[in-house]
Image (cartoon, rainbow, N blue to C red; front, top):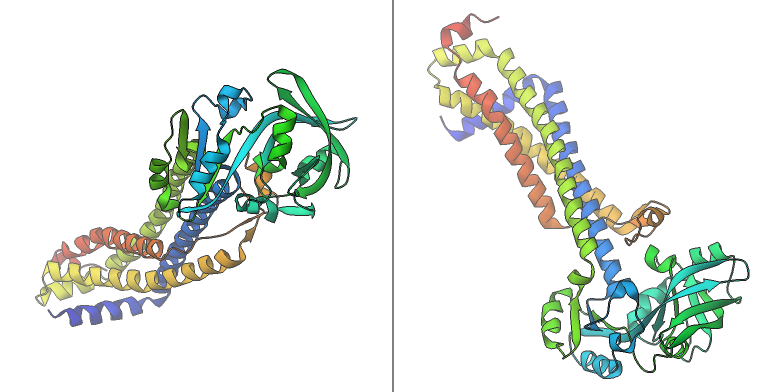
Length: 408
């Protein structure tokens, strides 16, 4: 029997019960659209978390003294880079590097007469493009000036907690490896809200020179942070920046917790995709089985007229193919439209960052439109539909003509 005949018969059979056909078609389209939207949302969320963490916190590459441990924010000279300017200059000369700057970290206590809290003090070069993302998060006041004498930049949430505002003076106490803690009074020049809780809630910024002065670190730095033009160049840059006594870290090593979280999240989301596919599969299987039961006598007549079992099976598979193909096309288009719209406008979640711990979240999530993912999800939807249609088609093909003709 010609393939065209199978298509014609399958199309006519689907039109016999239009209501059930439409319900099945809508289930396929909406199921696939939901999977595509979820994939776009999750992909966008994970990509955004990684992108913002790299931009705001870790950079793509960092150079540190071999003995330095971030969690301790050590100020011992043996744990700091004593040739930070030289190392930064070498990194900056590389064509793959977009921005580079030394940073000095120190543990400290920020307080007023009545309130205080522990913070990480970051001494930075305010002229470096590395800190443009911090500058973009400025909500009040201004960024640190180049000389930055006794200026401090703090998070909006931290300011609210301490009851201070732009223009107020605040006390900062930091440890000194050679003696008692050093205390200084700083003028709050700006408030930031980056969407990164680790920065907004527990980090303050002063100029590198001020940090070095108050900690007695001389010209030393805790790290050289490097931002690249392309993340794909990370391995080449790491290989080129190898120095005695210096550890060169890439963004994967610095964000192991985030990478682990992303892997776990991806596994969980894959289970959700599978559940949606399963629901659609049950609906498809039910539709085809109901069609077989309603047309048992017809199958007997077709068999008596000489149609072979494999031809009956092929006819049912063509019905499933028509439902799956049309439903999947509409589902891919519908899902793609939603993903594209929210990739531009985002989905507002309010203070989602507060519930995200140390992970980078803003107040909106943006989907990511990845054409390959659209095709991938559509392909697997078609595979599921064809797979679940095999049993109803096989069942129809095995009906005995005599028994089928006596069916009600």
